[in-house]
Length: 415
Image 1 (tube, rainbow, N blue to C red):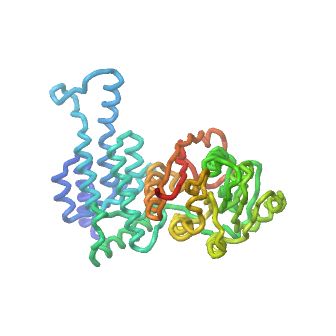
Image 2: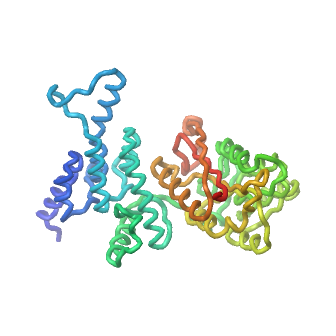
Image 3: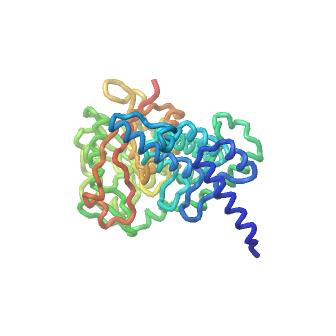
């Protein structure tokens, strides 16, 4: 039987923590967190202490922007107006919360993470703290047994010093991971389900039988630029993993490659490829099957490429990471680029693209994984039009892109 007195006390604790966070009262917050969790939420707003600490800066952000715009000095306490928010006090508050296990990507009632609020308010320092926390959380997940969908964890402040995590610390981290994963409202698809689904080819999109967008025409600009970066000259050897609508393969063909290998697993796409005559195009070799089955055969046969592009569907980041760490170095010619330069690797960079903070976290994670595998990454920012305004999502159930810019990666062996 529930104890009303206990519920009232718990709610008071929650409100006290939220208030201390909003006031950036670090001393009070430390005292409260000795016997309470940093992962409480307001029942009405969904605010966590992180949300409260960042949202409290909105007044200061608005006033600072207004002052800069009008060329006036911000008034102080003696003017009878509210004192401007001290961003450094907010920074200290966030650090205390993260030290006490605050989860970086909990959602409030407006479907915003704390980092989303910081990004919207243009509070760069607070936003970067949230991104850093997200990166530490994902790195911790990898240590506990593998990457999972973003929305899954908290971490201690000094993850670079966690080599000697004791058993109790790991157990606590695992509990936090499980709790966060259970709370995360994330729709994910699985590769076996996708491969058994029926695909429909439209003029401007390819969708599965649940109307999820597999590939869409709006990606053409990104694919064209990727092809230009990967095949800047003719006569190179290229491998594309994931044909889809054939957008990037069309651009690869325009570069007159010496050889053009394509790995594709979905039977509907394979049938479409043969109908369009891809099996008869110059230098094209089609490998039917999953990349995880085909790639080891290519490596065993000693086949090398000057450029490789990776764009699969319905696979989590684990798949890309596995390809980077286990297969890429065995396929890419270290001196196979133009003029004897290093071979080049690219991939469709759409991980976490439903919100900016997730995208920024994943970009850092993949760059670190690439560097650990012996690659350095150059990023090019490409503007993405308003896809809602242009009607690109009509008839598509799941919007897999919600950002204004795309970070296009080109990777080469570290010198």
